[in-house]
Length: 353
Image (tube, rainbow, N blue to C red; front, side, top):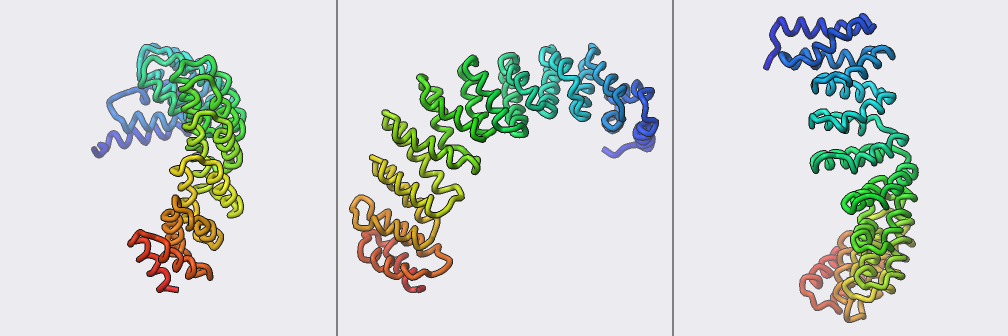
């Protein structure tokens, strides 16, 4: 809806109050920010309040938290967030216990924006205090956002402290949060729970190793996955460790020699053929002479012949440069495969050479 001429004038007048630059205009601006008659005027007042300089203005905004009406509290909370008034944390905490859900939500949002590593223990402590699932979901989202702005190892250390004393659902969330934080400390903490005497924690921690997304952590995660694959006594966890390990070789950037070494390690350690064949997904994704040679090394093994043939053909199709070993590999595929489609694809690659 378009603004009326009178409303435009009033918005301009509110905006001009920032030029006065002292707390004397606060009562007018606060009243304008809280009024419901015009959204445009309320927004202009909030914008002006956010821009007014000075500690006296900060103090007046924080004082609004003591008001009894929800609108004043929410205005104060939003302004504390926008002005980054970090000294107001003690007063803000009261907002989490407010009877009004909108006040509680605004408080959580503000904490998520202004909290630093010093406030993280306070934020984590709120996990056990929120009043319903909706607020818990909001707090968890805020924690993920806030923690990823903090120093990784420092944030992971604070999260690790509260896992042992938290409820089971919160423990599982905190493990997920560590994956979002990433870094050496997060990896170490998550890996430690792989060996917990608790199926839920062990299951979540081992799953997270396979879902880790932080490229700088790839070597640490690879070591943790390999350890799981070699030490675990349960075949399911061994397989999970191996699959997580080979995912790193398939998806993360690394030197080719390292990728090939990981694929060979995976193949040698795996006891299930369904795990072993995952190495061919690594070979076919990186079409180089060395990957082609690795795939072709399995072409005479009956259990893996067809996977080797498919990987070799895929490499031949994807190779940007037609390196010298492709024709011989395609002829071998045509001879060995029983898959008519793979045979035809190999012939097409050969015809293009």
